[in-house]
Each structure stands twice: as structure tokens, then as C-alpha cells.
Length: 505
Length: 104
Image 1 (cartoon, rainbow over the protein chains, first blue to last red):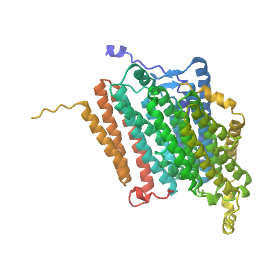
Image 2: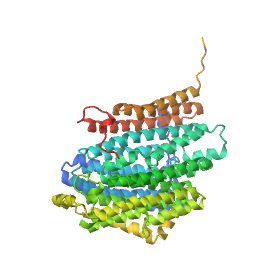
Image 3: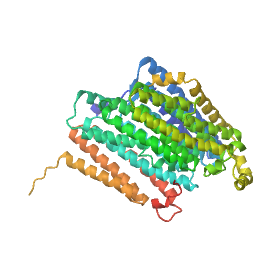
Image 4: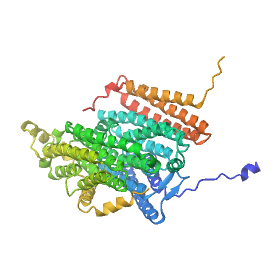
């Protein structure tokens, strides 16, 4: 007994700054859940949970700022037995995730009240999901990647199905759940095979092992790498792993779609970049062609399939697949410039896509089920500001000059050309031309008068349309998004340096 | 009597087979609960792989990772069943073919 009492249990050193943002988000989520359990009055609980969530996200953002300064001055920070590695790359994408979370939170604030949904649960789930995403950006161990992936996905399954009264929301929830669970299992099998081949799951450990040893047979490792790519491919919705994207984006409540489109992509690409850049740089001749194929397929399928869609949310879902293709193009170049352009794309894309979905939350009638192009016809004539903003975000995504969308596309194309990928760059340009067609289709629909018989319909629904005044929360999101997209388009210098600093692991 | 020596690769092949059965089952079966069980089969196949590699490499990490998988799978089960119950409460059977509102 006395022997046991004296035996010490060595605890790993934890640098709490390294996991600060995650802690802030999780604590805020727990406080929200507790507030809901203790205070039972609906009105005050909604207000309290909203403010707690805002404070949590703000604290996470501030901690990321500290991390950025600390890492820039003292070098990367490795903690929790090497499973978390905070470097400028991770912090940059953490900032993207937290910015997207903050905007999606603001969108939800008014949306939930309008649609009469339970607010505290929604905020708590969103914060937990964001914590998983931030953890993913700094994960330095494959098992942390897997756990972070699940922590970000499981709340998202619930969020997608959050509007239980709406059939399409339920359906998007179950579809996302089944395919998400499938992709996680595939990713995990990849982790197992890589572990079997290298004897470690640490990303830097794998890199060290491969640098010092020559594998007798490479089949297990390459199969593991392929399965990891499939698993992450699902999360970032790269073709051919994109089947869930249109259905889920269309059916999920619009603020959730905005959150999924922007933040989940950033987290997924963070894992992909770190995995390929740190663990498997020696296998670049094996993964580069695969990524090139994924990029080309995503560009072609995303752009072409969007042309024949009639639902605006669905069109934006396909366009997000095409955007994933551009980002993959930057990653497959496997140069500092390529990574820089991919990072910048993720940042600007977050603002463009959240902005577009922000307009959609206020554009149409109550119910979140009326998003066909016909519902949007003449919107800009009826409500110039709202319609004009949607046109702006859509054209920014198309890559019109003076918007951030143009700068990031240009960066991606030049990095691909620098890397000698002329074929892929050509496919990218052609896809951008096809994509311009459906982006213009939305914009034209916004500015054309509806046909005679349909013109009567909006008038009859005047009251329902009246509900959708742009409230102050949405207005803040729209202002920030417009400012960010314009700023990135007109003065890209600061953003480029910021992303350039973050290209090294 | 044939003396059969069971090596690690037997377990790896068994795990690969289980994983494939799970993956194919998920894609071809229409009942959501069966699809759900297929996911569990896939995860457990991975667990078997982890344990086998841990034994072959004489490294305890692989066995520890199984606990992570188990915990995550349990969370997934809870959420997945909740979604299924919420959706199929007002429908007669739990088939994926009924989920046809979203398409295009």
C-alpha cells in the first residue's frame, strides 16, 4: 500500500495555449447546455445561450491570435505527447474556421427565432462541431484526426436534421449521417493500415519513419494512404465522393449549410494538407496524380452538373464541389505557392459562401423550402439590396475582377502553371467558363421580371415576404462578408502575406 | 490432423473481408437499420486490424486506439439511432427508398 501511494503517475505536459481555442469552444457549449437545463424559461435562455456562444467564439478567436503571435516568435508548439502541433498553418485555418463559425452563429440567431427552433441545443452543437474543426487543423496524430473528424461530424448530422418538421431537413440529416459514417470508417481503416505499415500514428512520426527506412513492401502503406484520401475526400466533397453534398446542402437549414460549406471544408483540407505535406512528402509521385484526377473530376462534375439544376441552394452545392476542385489544384502543385493559394482560397471562399447563404436565409418566404430559381426571379427588382448582394456574392464566386474570387482563382491558376500542370490549369479555366454560365443564370434571374401569372403570387404573400426583413444579425454578417470579399479583391497584398506565412508546417 | 498455423495475415484478411462485407452491404441494402449495422461491421473490422497489427508489431498503441474507436462508435450509434427514430416515427418502414424529397 505504501509502495503504491508513493508511485507517481507521470502526466503528460499540456501547454494549454496549444488547445486554448478548443477549450474555449467546448466550455461555451457546456455552459449553454447547463443554462438550458437550469433555466427553463425559453426567452431568456435563448438570449443567454446566444451571448455565451458569441463570447466562446470570440475567446477562441482571441486565443488563436495569441497562438499566431507566439508561434511566429517562438516556433511551432507541440503538446500532449506530440499529438497536437500548433504552427502558423494550423492557426491560419483555425482562424478561417472560427470566422466562419462566428458568421454562421449570427445567421442562426435570427433564423432560429423565425423558424421557431430550439436555440440552445443548436448553439451547443455548433460550438462542439467548431471545436472538432479547430482540433483538426492542429492534429498531429492520425487518431486525433479521426477523433476530431467525428467530433465535427456528429453534431453536424444532428444540425442537418435539426428542423424536424421539415421532411427535406430530416432526409438531409439521415443521408449525411449514413455517408458520413461510411467515410469515417474508411478513413479509420486507412489509419489502421498506415499504422500497420509504419508502426506509428503520429504524422511527424510517420514522416521520420519513412525518411529512415525503406519499406520492403509498400502495398499496405499505399492502400492506407488511398483510404485516407477517400475518407477526407468525402468530407471536402471532392468528386467522386460528392454524392451527399447537393442533397445535404439543399435540405439542411440554411445557416447550417453555410457553416458546413465554409468551416468543414477548411478543416478537411487542413487534415489533407498536413497529411500529404508532413507525413507523405516522399510519396508525392504517388499522390500527386491522384489529387490531379480528383481536382479535374471535381471541377468538371461540379461545374457541369450545376448548369442543369433549378434550386439555388443546390446550384451553390455543386459550385462548392467545383471550388473544392480549385483548392485541390493548389494542393496538388505541392509547392509553397500552391499551398499559399489553397489557404487563401479557403479564407476568401468562406466569406463568399457564407455571404451567399446569408442572403438566402432572408431572401424567400418562410419555411426554408422555397429556393428554386423561380422563387428568386425578380428578387433584385423587388428588393434591390438583397438581390444585389446575392448577385454580388454569386459573381464573386464566379471570379469577377475586383472581388476576392478573382484573386484567388488567379493565384490557383498561376501556382498550377508554375508547377507545370498545364493540362489541369486548362481544365480549371474551362470549368470556370462553364461555371460562369450558371452563376450568371442566377444573376439574370434576379434581375428579370417574373411572368405575368407568377407576378401575382409574391403580392399575395406580401406578409410572408415582410417577415424576411434583413435583421441586424444578418446585416452584420453581410457587411463583414462584402467588406472581406471586396478587400481581398482590391488589396490582396495583406491577405497574401498572411497566407504566405502560413504555408510552412 | 492438420496442424494449422494461424498467422497475423489470417486476421488481416478476415478483417478486410468483414470491412468489404460492411461496405458493400451499406451500398446495396435499402433498410436504414441494416445500413447502420453495416457501418458497425466496418468499424469492428478496423478494430480487428488495429489489434492484429498491435500484436504483430509488438506495440500497445494499436490496442489503445481500439478504445478510441469504440467510444466514437458508441457516440455515433446514439446520434444515428436518434435521427432514425425522429425520421421514421411517422413513416411505416425504415427504407432508404422513402427518402426521395431531395434529388436532382
